[in-house]
Image 1: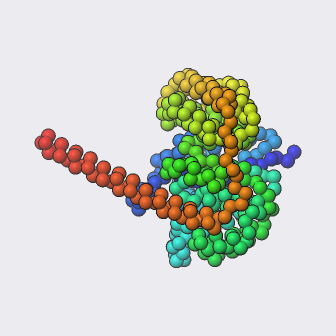
Image 2 (image 1 turned 60 degrees about the vertical axis):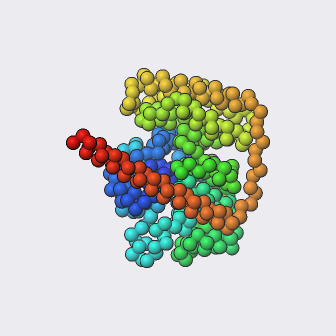
Image 3 (image 1 turned 90 degrees about the horizontal axis):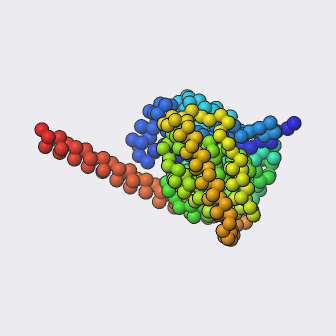
Length: 383
């Protein structure tokens, strides 16, 4: 029996791993981290393990990473994946050193010309019925790139418009050729089921409304799990697995998880069919204890199981309450996106985000210096 494939394509930094690169010192510190020192975005590892666990006899879940991190980090990152309990089906890193040696300095930071051909080439080998879910963040242009990719594969972007977009984005001629060649090998369809954008920079979700409803901004991967269950991509047990990890490894309180769940269910309900939240509640109610719970780290397994059950009960109540309320009207959907105009909007958003990151880094440095001065003054007084 042929398997139905679902492809999960992940960005790495700020989507799967917590990474800081606002300043040069951040980049140096991040490059020196060992696999054991690298921190996950809370819930990301549990979510990928849940994605793997949810595949059954009739379906196959493939996990790929496309990262802007340099190729030199491959061995460290592969070890990190192993520590997190999985091995991706594919993992691409940017040839940063090669770009520098060839004088392609723009390519060190440029993302559209880098990611788009990789996404298109990654699509080519799979049957038209293979669906995709893409994961990115708001620190870069992932929502734009993923949406452009989805509309390219669906045949909604002309070759002329694509050429203008790539020129505006600063792609090199070789990258343009790569995009065009990869696009020729793609069967035009509409395979991208969902685009998840982690709001690492706390961008308001409404900033991405041009890309709704395919793009869903999330604050936390518990929200991701709920979105994918509502999509029918994952089973309800995935929510349980992510909640278990958040309560254990990351010290989340039940109330915070409930608030996160209510936020995403409120934002999604306008796009859901009748009784979708009731169906979610029914699935959650049928769950028993996890069939193969992960070892507890910060509390006893009994306590963790109790907290997880309590949260799931509250989640069922929230879903049923929202189902009982009048359904809001869904915002109008974009039928044709002008990606050339949208690139200018994205460029301005990125510039504003960059200024905000630099300001936050400066404030952090100033506060650290002030604490050091105060500590020095206290030491003098004590002497």
